[in-house]
Amino acid sequence: MEQNLHIYNSINRQKEVFTPITPGHVGLYVCGPTVYSDVHLGNVRTFMTFDVVYRYLSFIGYKVRYVRNITDVGHLTGDSDDGEDKIAKKAKLENLEPMEVVQKYTNGFHDVMRIFNILNPSIEPTATAHIIEQIEMIQAIMANGYAYESNGSVYFDVRKFSEKYPYGKLSGRVIDDLYTNTRELDGQDEKRDSLDFALWKKADDSHLMKWQSPWGVGFPGWHIECSVMSTKYLGKSFDIHGGGMDLKFPHHECEIAQNVGATGHEPVRYWMHGNMLTVNGRKMAKSDGNGFTPEELITGNHKLLDKGYSAMTVRFFFLMGHYASTLDFSNEALQAAEKGYRRMCAAMKLIAGIQPSPASSFDVTQWRNACYDAMNDDFNTPIVISQLFEGVRVINSTKEGSITLTAADIALLKSTFEDFFYRVMGLQDEEGKENSQLTDSLMQMILNMRAEAKANKDWPTSDKLRDALAAINVQIKDSKEGTSWTYEG
Ligand code: AMP
Ligand code: ZN
Image (tube, rainbow, N blue to C red; front, side, top):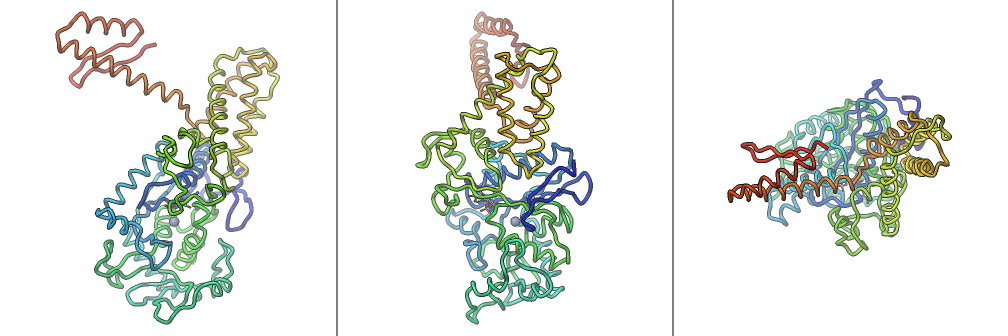
């Protein structure tokens, strides 16, 4: 398996064979959300991209440790070094404790992940739970001479670092260009140089989230948490680091500099960047008013939406594009995805009814391999989907008799759909889900009617309900905890 998977490595700008540091194991780190507001659909796209990466690596047999953090301190407005903390700002606005803001939006984020069938990571560390480790890494960088203290804050010394190590390689920025493009320091600035970035910031009395440090009371910079949490759980060097394209600079560039500055090691073997969800060509962003929440999407309650769409329709829509390309949101595209997704679900239901033939006129093994080849080619889900549509054509042709399959090939066809549709791409059959929800509600209604009859000592009615259920193989059982039911159909 190891020779086959190719990943586009952002730092080298080419597709490379994936070889993990430890055979059979993969360390994967993905920058998680800053939990100061509801996630929008653009955020969901990035987390779904890495959900599929995680699923596929696990599917082909790797033991994956997947770390996806929660940013709950240090991310300042404008992604800058001087803004206000996004979470503290929200806490003031809503008159909440910062940790109430963090909890509220962390819960909301988890709900959204569940709706889109995005798996939980193996570890979900938070920045505030790693303050000590962040201080320790800052001290290590200072001890190596790549950071300095200034008025209770600590900054990374980019010029000094770049004399020994490359800076700007990931984002393709040339350090001299960066200097000409940044503002001059006005002499009042705490930084020695305009490219330097904060590792630790001094906090004044009004600041809500702050900790004691060797440099006084303050809080960590935004980038240091990811350097710390990735290497703490995955090692000084680890396999894959992912995130949205918009994080390449400065966030990921600074992460590399911090890790190299602290340990002398390049932290990441393969950098992967998911591209943006756009609306009319512009990045979906909360601040631009063109970002809608998953709830608005499902209800259709937003000016950009003609109607509501299900979570699985959106999952299908996202996977119809390659993760490294931008994807433009439109009602037409979602409607096409909805149609395609339903057609595929309907075809899969027909597999069980295909009559086996003594010989196959379609090469199912080759078709299954084509699904693997597409995933091995930098997780090319649009090609997998087109291969699965080829499978839909085969299913329908068996009905007309123009294609024949042996029993073994029918089983292989079925398991390929199960593997790639459900396990690798994480799609679910919503019709089944809706039906089971409906069944649960109806059963609850009937059991309530029976309980009411019993409470009124109306034994003929309660017996009639029990017998009618038994007639359709539904057994009910009364116990101290209440009444439960089983279906033995
Ligand atoms: P944030 O909570 O802003 O730190 O973003 C969380 C993740 O969502 C990051 O990996 C971003 O790169 C990603 N992201 C933000 N906006 C978009 C978008 N429009 N499309 C895709 N990913 C996005
Ligand atoms: Zn990060």
